[in-house]
Image (cartoon, rainbow, N blue to C red; front, side):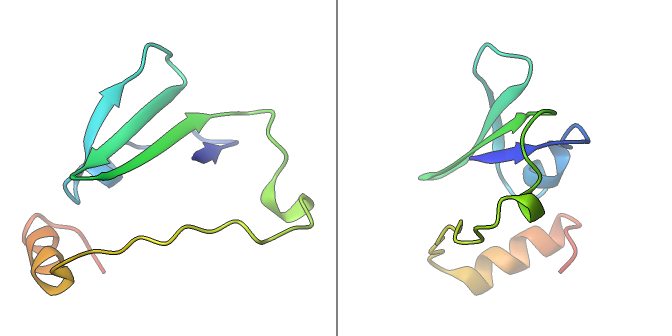
Length: 81
């Protein structure tokens, strides 16, 4: 889950690398999906900023099969590294 505090997220960032937007019935939330990967993102203006959490152990592992080919595909669509 990805919480955005101050600025509404720009869905075109994830769409440019092959994700599709899935509406979930709430204007503040979306899921972005590509193959078996799903990222849930929400605009949460009242969420505590990460620097004030005091715990930086939040992470995700994403394994991509054929990473070099995928990188070439998204570069061809205009994504920058």
